[in-house]
Image (cartoon, rainbow over all chains, first blue to last red; front, side, top):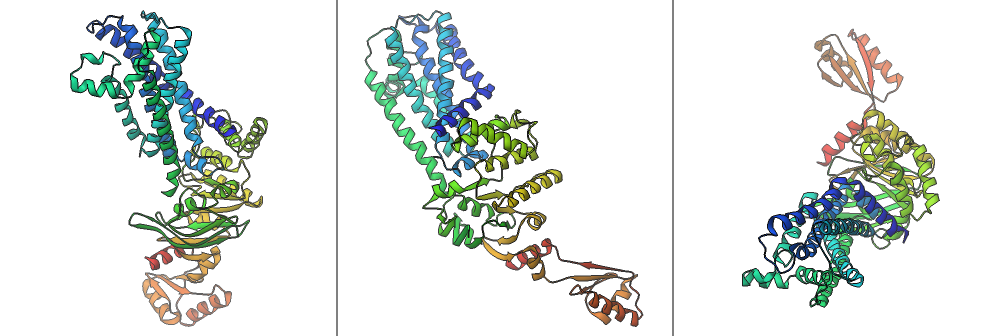
Length: 247
Length: 302
């Protein structure tokens, strides 16, 4: 327990001191949201206010950005030999990954808070009850955890910090092929098939439905995707970490 | 024996890095693994500190098998790798407290241990600065301090002074010397012969993944040949005339004669030259350095 807490303390402290990453983690989603609402929003016709529509998408977009910085910081640790020190100590080696994942969750929580705050200033009017907020945040937490473990795995196998950052390209790109910014009904049918069946769409749809007090249709699907991804990503990342020793 | 290996092998793809390494290290001693880059020094340390699995052979550290009883091995060793494994964005004190906490020290014990190590390694003034601002020597000292938090029985030092300036190097050597007096067994790798000569009780020369020499610094030096007399004359002709009298090898006006280093031998050589009326302008005795040993050993093995 002390070991995990110490590693979590380390992860959070290091990420608090890496100001560039921290500022980007908060500023980027806020800017993206402003871009979508003020630049594209007018052109995207929607029955509801566009800011209400886009907030869940932006929240999921920041998890992708957060995952990228997690992959990069894990890769950095692997490269620098810090991991060798931890692995030569009598502790479970992958607790160092736990530290990075915890820091990732903390960064995402901060970004989520900033996005919601700015969205409220921009006219976001969620109608959710307290219970729905808790459910929405819980689902996002589960999704962030899954993505962070996935990112940790990428960090372990990446040969360099630069290749770990490649993950960011996919993570930032995938949300566009979902219902994050426009309803999938507006897409060509082949793309719609992709968008409807990728894991991000049910997560976004569920968060959106919860925050705007709509019926939640894809809740179980979102939960299954996120939970399944978490189990697989955790197993994969820790397996990769143990496997380093055969190198 | 605190370290024992038998026929340790390791390959990376087509490259054989270790080809049957046999080593024995006595508790409380200092062993230097000496060799050029790529000789397998780091791989040997990585296997013994459980970071890498060997392909073949066996290795025991403090009686524990490094593959099957890795956790037990990790409980008694510490590793200071080639690159200072410190967190740049934490302060020196935070780094030390973190390691102590990972060794399950209580909060207050961890803080106390950090203070003790900061004092011992002369880092008190820099304790609350981020490591990013440290010099190379300070970083290495902190790295070593972090390895000592849990008082290991066996300390692995992989090239502890590579890249350090001469002053920092001497400071590191003094720190390592103190550890030896405390009874810590030290297993170090180096490519500096001077370092091995100064720190180690025993030197193992590694070349192409195998041991090519094993012994004390003096034994290794004697194995290459004893002392040599270098006699310098006023001209090359005199050197040749002297060669005809006492033998040896000439190099311009200098004649090198193998010797046992005794005064009797020196006297006889000078007397013979006096009798032959060749006047010597300068005499020096030359004891082989580890560099000579190294060059001759690796040349033979290559």
